[in-house]
Image 1 (cartoon, rainbow, N blue to C red):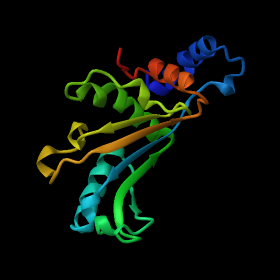
Image 2: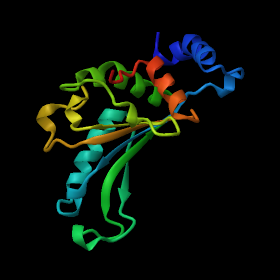
Image 3: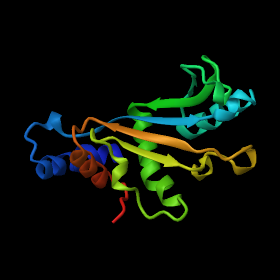
Length: 178
């Protein structure tokens, strides 16, 4: 049973009972997942963006978008319009597959992992997780990476509060610190 089927068949009813929601459309669910990599070194080395873009497409299964600087910052030798990062927004089936992989494969592979802190859920019920390296993803071949880079995963929900978001993520199987 996939995570999506589990959500539709069992988790939705459990969330309705636990959160005392009467309308099934008001039950919190995951809306989208945004995976982001910041590449400050792209101002110096132009070939970095293509390598990061290739790794992100392997990780997410979708072609990433290069983000550009909105303002110029002379202290960082950054000009407006310079490429400084890569992001992917996942929805639908790709989102479901990535979420299942993230919860069941990626999080358990983290070194010295004690659980995700509850403070990573914001007041709107969205979860933000920062990963220190891309090598924990099974799609990335360790021989082909030039440098380990961190990435951020933001799981956006339609939960309207921190408590509802936490309950959703607990039932989805996200391990939190005790």
